[in-house]
Length: 162
Image 1 (cartoon, rainbow, N blue to C red):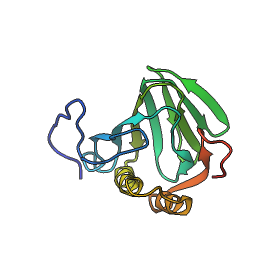
Image 2: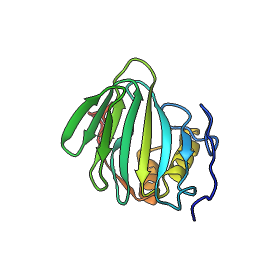
Image 3: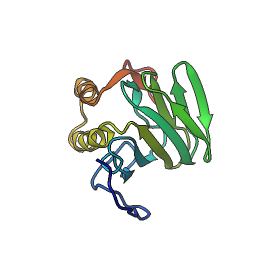
Image 4: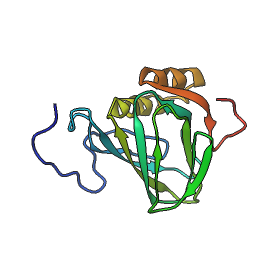
């Protein structure tokens, strides 16, 4: 069920707390719980030369808007370098990865549709990565739990098998 009231999420704030990604604190701006599972909206910091492994979502499309930094995206067999103000669409079932290729912290806005459980994935990934570095098998299992499949390495480490 969707929320029936408006709400504000202040700069730097999140609908949930304590979720970290590869570049810092992830801000959930609109939860899937707010939209009845129709979509969710995140603000995601990106560390220089870092990004997720090549993966695909079984059920979610993703739309990325670059707020800060230059980012390399690989979506399917296409590679893009996009700057602040650019947006890029990643359809479900198509492998994709991204890397901040700037020397400074970057920032993305990301919309997923339908919302699925990505906010739960980010929370669990945050807990996992706050401990000792997770082994690859555990990371792959976590992706699979949330209906994603890892099919390759992060763009920042092309020599490492996925």
